[in-house]
Length: 278
Length: 266
Image (cartoon, rainbow over the protein chains, first blue to last red):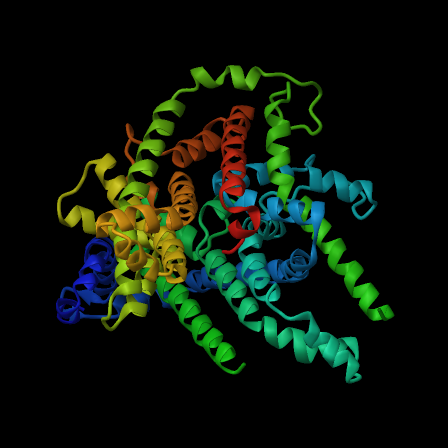
């Protein structure tokens, strides 16, 4: 960059921020990666070999992916219709939707996870509601279960599914669908062939956001499901903060990093392809 | 409208209503519990009281951690605003290669697991001998707040018409005055929303801050998580209600300044 910037004085303005993040953030990440593949005798994959040889590691990876997939699925099923409603809503409904989506974004995850601890108790709101409607015959505890974890996580990440889809849906020209109708396309056909392809970039980025955040979430599982159920991020945190096992922590951190980066790369590749095809 | 469309439309509105209730449930529950009279979390509470709020002044560790969080959030947001805006100007006005890569790089801390970033930075800071909690927190939080500033200011700058500055200069303004009188007001909403989101992100950060706190210097989320683990009583709900109130105020200010719809332009 510096060579090009010399010819263009304005380019130098980028230097402080780039240098700062380079030194404070990128360099340490590179060192973390480098250390994880370096042993006493140079390059080695021994730490990863040990990690992947342990069946417990695979259970942790499976936990991480399963919970992240379920959370993403719940967010998609709720978020897609909500994004459509938000693009169409007017008046009070619009304000209610905007407040319901933006307000939780500005409230800390510790506050929300704590609230879900209360909601998911045996005498909590969800249990009372399900007993009241006759779905459950007696009160049950959802706290410290996988269902409870997915509910809490979906609650925290839902806005990150809704907003990218909404930003695409609101740009879709309603006349496209009307034109399809005039040409005799059925509603389902119009949804599948006109609406869905146009919203795909938004769906991809929403899914990528929620999936990568659920893969790396830390506070929500530690409050809603506890220590007996480990995911990659909680295991990483525990290794560093409680067990003082830096080797295991660095290994899980690198596995998590590789997972998160591949989600981001895959989704931006997919978004570019979808965007280019239109 | 055909029958299928009517059913689909009804379904969309039903899910939307459900989502409003679902999204607001934790906030409503927290506020309700904080005003309850009982020490257990029964809903609705048996009676209403302010007892948990009366305990706030005497809650140990709360005020120092709030002060730390406010200081770190304010300072890191200011540093990010300065560095991020300079960088955004360079990216929009500059003519050098790799501008997209730089933008992606500066926003990337948002996309990577905070815990991993935190561990890497902890080891990096140790290597250069930075051990004190407060400066470490500040240095780390600039990384957290930078993406919000770069993303929002970059978007606003790329819509800004730079010929307006030339116009102001033709009309007799100096370059500096033209920037101050024309560009700064046009970018003010972007500065405010990005500062708001950056500030809140810093106030809320747990996974990175956890590595840089010690017994004396804690940020609010870390102190709160400690409360949740040590003494889960409605005092936490009262603190949370205070934070919700803060968020509501921020939302109202944001609505006045740029409108709710613009805030949703994520």
